[in-house]
Length: 286
Image (cartoon, rainbow, N blue to C red):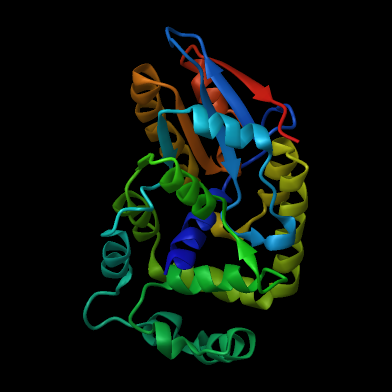
């Protein structure tokens, strides 16, 4: 279930447009504006093939030196999976067969072939659960890594508490604001264009490994998971995170790890922090 949660986060994180160029780095130092010590912002990709995963030593060092650790959500909350299941369940009387309508058989056949399981397994869940599985099948590998899972393990070893910039309820509400019919149509489109989607995903991973957040925006700007909901998926979330970040940075050095697609652009976290008066500089993370 954690894999599904991570992919829901990924779906949210791939929604952005190229605006301004930034330095090639996934790690950023935040200082100034009255802060007594710097904090750090790191861009993740939520699920990646094991052979593509990398964690620069400087990231580990800044993580270890920080008092507060934030992911997009508090993923070590023991109630999270139960809450997720509850929020992802369709209302009584609704099911995927109704939502997908005439396209259900085609989608069912696709998932049986690609994932070895049909849609009946997900029939009582909202379409976003199917989308999460769809993203998982785009990976060209069996063995995967997760930056969030590794950060959680690091926090446990260092006896640090993981906190969330938003709640699972916040993230789920973003999808609830999109009609189920729109999500289902988007899933069908992605299935029909699956080869192209696999290539786009591979391109995104390549650009991520280059730590080039400007190119990352360009590679994901055509992602179908926008679903005409850019404000909810990206702009509002980035804006909502800033006051949480400010409060905690004032209390002590903090390390924030969010999807890399949230970093750049005029509405990205880096630009919003600079607008709020902070100095945000790239930290070499090779």
